[in-house]
Length: 192
Image (cartoon, rainbow, N blue to C red):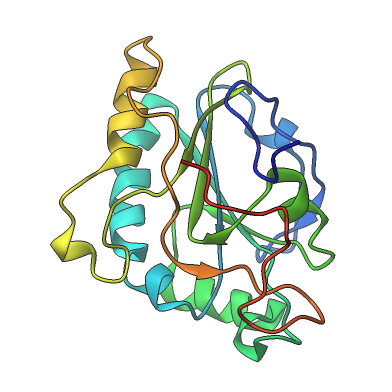
């Protein structure tokens, strides 16, 4: 079995606390297309592309696309990824998505999150339609030459499967609890 969800797989369940003080499950995002992405507070690939991700979320919200961010990084591996840091980051940046905390890392394992950021796009039936990156230069979004997330959303909203359903996410690896900051599970490998 592959580490990362495969195209057509259903969205795994979760019940996670958010920076707004509420707890969310996938049912809270019923309706249109759902983008779940694994992120964190410190990774330069995240901070370098946050405003691009914001622009995508803002552009597609009127078309029923919802964005949900999940931080699964261990604060013991990287202290900046604490829940308190998440709350402060949302207060400072007011991102247009719900920011969830996966302290147990069970959700990251269920999805097969490899890096931050790593995007998973689910269609209206909550089947995985795309997994991978949003752009090819997340460390500096101004240099992007590909825009896979936008193209994927355009395809799905037009009633078509994504032309490129899988790409390799580009970013820092998920910080697994009790492991070296660069460790990845043995069964995790590039997905494209």
